[in-house]
Length: 133
Image (tube, rainbow, N blue to C red; front, side, top):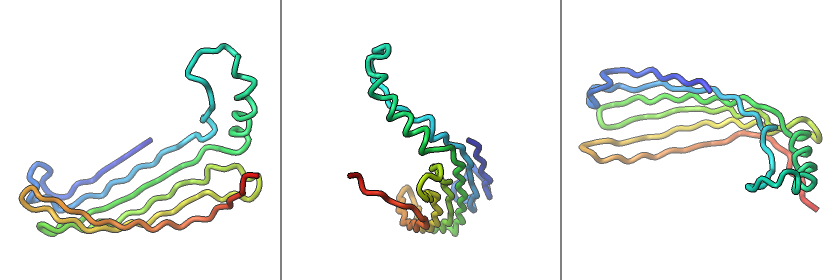
């Protein structure tokens, strides 16, 4: 994972802060997920978990996720905008499309130790769902 932030104004003086931009990028290896017991059975449950773990290996792959956000401060009011991209964690077995894009916005109020924030997230994505029979 890598992250950055860029601050505008005096970081130490809250009243002179003007805003910031921040972001991060991460790689998530979804294939690394495994079923196992909390006990060290040395193979007693391996026969049960092996097909489940093989199914994970066959269905999932690694994905890159990225997020970017910004805030502008106008005295006691702050305006926030952001976005996120979550990469497709699925191997293409039956048309799965698991990538997700999110747009965010918000308003904040901060004055004399009182904070209130309102936010909205809208998600855009396509995926296929299969009923379990």
